[in-house]
Image (cartoon, rainbow, N blue to C red; front, side, top):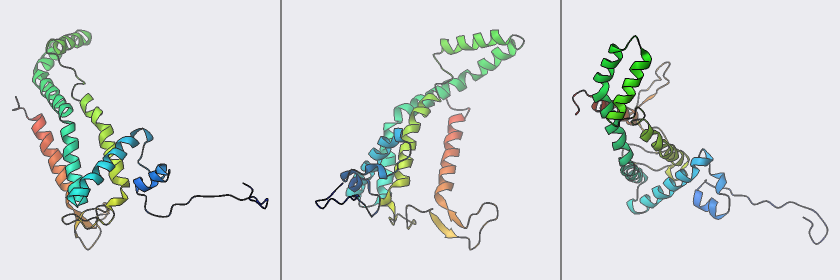
Length: 209
């Protein structure tokens, strides 16, 4: 635009600092903070605001992440329970399904019809165990986007972790494992793998009624 002397120029508004969402939003520059997919950005922003709220009275971002995880887990309990019940129902029907397939192995269409009738009789859907899990995915992705882009976590410590934005190195090997590229032992992935293995074993246990 031209000034009083008729000279033309451009005006810019610059922000130099960490990408804290609230200050950026106040300046009308909230889009600078990248939370992943635009469709899921509101979930990520909501999770980040809740995380900062919890940290406000807990005084630690590690505890805030734990509390946020518990809250989200409680919110998703109905979907988790529905998925679990559907999975258990499918496992109980599996012997009957196998018997039908064996009985009509020469007539695939007849076998499919009887299997569908079996599902209808017991009010079970083959997708019943997967659909509730798929409905939870946007929440998990949004939470990942919030934690990945939360500059507030930089330098925040919790237990043995000196920085929540870095891998949770429990101790260093002193060398790098060939092919894998690991130079330290990270405990959290081990705990997560063990928990998922145990949960999967409990879900598929033939003794579950």
